[in-house]
Image (cartoon, rainbow, N blue to C red):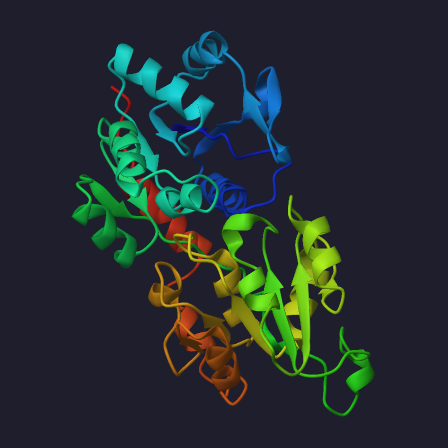
Length: 341
């Protein structure tokens, strides 16, 4: 079987969509399913304003049509609503190809963080994009409720996973040897944020808090330089990967997730897998993953959520992650797929 995935987020980008697609491709390959992911690097493009690492494909339709014909997939999935996604949608409709789509970002809130556009107009555009999709894949039940209330149809759950062999509490330093901590020079507790450093992630709401300890930010993005200047007392470690990232997770005391625009939050399950309680706002994504008062706290007062996390025991964190595996995620994805003809 051959599956073709079209995504404006791919290649050199570092975000939840790319991480999800990479893990999906790995798992589907184990099932003997041939996967081809087409991203912006296959086309002439320009960088997105304010996000130089994100490339937008220019006039991709003709080449994209050749790619689809040459690969001759059994199933077609359009992962994003960007230029590539729009071209793929147009081709699929013209040639009567059945396809699926996915909803990764809460765009009405995402756009509102930048431009004063009414949410109902953004929802109208998104409904137009997804209305021809045979199944619109979404990561959480709370997002399903939100989209249904805004007129979306054909919604199906496609959850996410976490690699517990990489992210786990065993990587945490021992109290008997505190110098093995990634943060042994810093004042405790360690309050950690991991993710893109951009406006929609709402990071200043975390960094503005008057709270004991050291705030640490891991990640890169267009707001990094501005935040480094504005918050000199915060530790900025840039992008981290693999074992180094897993150690930074495990050695922290609380994971802080200030975003209100994410539809899931892969970093939340990575933190939980590392034995780290999560403090977040009660919004789509966190309310589906965090078991309140068990592995984290949800509160409109982020400081209060952090303080409560500091007194949580972490002996039940792994139990809450049983449903989040990339193997399960890949099976859900394939169950949602439709044949192209």
